Length: 260
Image (cartoon, rainbow, N blue to C red; front, side):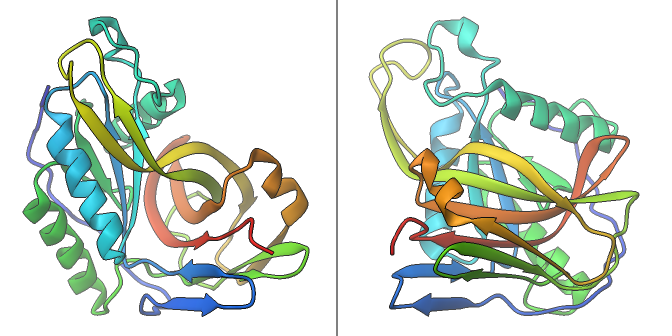
């Protein structure tokens, strides 16, 4: 289910730079992580080409250098196995990426790196080389030019966004909740009889603020965030043009959100 055209990576990178880091709060048992890149994998339980890509994403999650997210799509459901994790919102996000790039490259498994470049999700060398090229453009150990810091207090999660170049007409701060792992036994379709593990599966994504290039802070009540029962969340800062998602400028994630 591959449909790949050559993508030429281009762009100007500027802004405040901070290397990725991990901080631990032993009192609250949460882990706050600043990734060096964001990799979104558009995958499907009904796609026979996807299991190798799902394993690549799992390796990225284990290594911990990037924010790696699975976004299962629903457009292969008609083949006989409705994806138990698939969402129409993920399919639409993938299509909007293609519209923003002005191409028709919508396929599985597709990895979109920092909202800009797509590669076949099972091709780990292509993912690594793309991230390396982005870091080289910045001259830093991160490909994300805007710093985001998360601070968990007793009642709130504070999101601190640094200053930088918005690069586009709109830049949105997104809150993403995801599940660490799902093991799915697939009974029909192209992967019939397989049991596949999916990592960092996105469950919801919502806008929580607009960024204009200056430092900003957003505080969210932990009581409201904990209502969905999920323990992991990420924040990404993403530019957009004509309503289509574009370059991701910053990211951070926190695990142990529900711990006291």
